[in-house]
Length: 347
Image 1 (tube, rainbow, N blue to C red):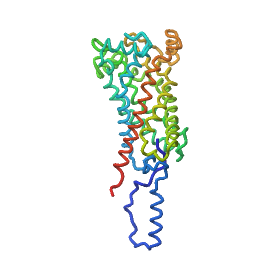
Image 2: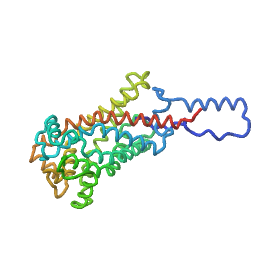
Image 3: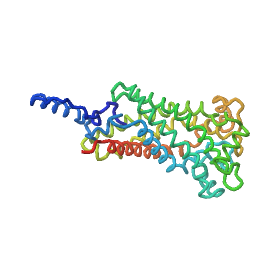
Image 4: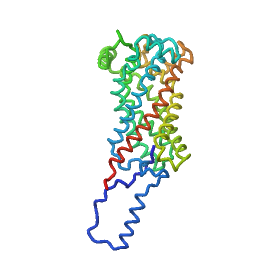
């Protein structure tokens, strides 16, 4: 990510004094103008490495929305495999292996089965990531105190961002996972709105947020690890060859994002299994939980599958989050660069 200093590059210079300045004053003004428009970053990205240097709030939201949709849509089949593997007792998945799970989905539903629920993902991912990245940017600016190396600020900003974005994403994530499990012909739900209506009618509004607490508990450490690792990895990769950092910008973002996504995904897999169980209650053989307590779900998983049950789907989860984070971060930074260039005053 970028630093938090606000660059004067995009400031308005329309106000001028009416009196004619002396040659000495002109020279001083020229020196001041040069000093404030110089790019202080070692990579000379023309201040593209500075947070809030001309980007408006809606532009951060648009960049995040584009990045989130690109990430989830590209990796959706892997997410479907992970969901099937994590849902204990779900039909027809009985094996915890990736390839058996994939073969079972293709056999029962065909290729279309890998994309069931993608519409719900699209409806949730765009708005949620718009909130996610815009909140992250502004919290980071406030918490970092102008220090681009403040990794604690990065982590805390990520936590703030995920709490708010999960409130937007959780209902559609629940719909998405139920569709992923329900199968094609003769499935429980015919589509997104059918699922929404049936869940609301049979289980009430609370069902849409049954996993919210677990999601926040999972995503808070996930996001903290993810953002801190991303910022540290990006800094380290940029430092390897600072002279070519500008040319390799997207490669750096993608590599750092992949490393951050894989590490965060591995650490938080047990909580992701719990989240899937809570969101898919009663669907295709999944258990129902009266309390919705994280502790109760943990106990049920351990009784049925042992401790290895808490790691169900960890391989596809890492397979999802490593490339997904690479896609997300590189798309996000590319979108920000587009808006930087769009806002740059025409000469």
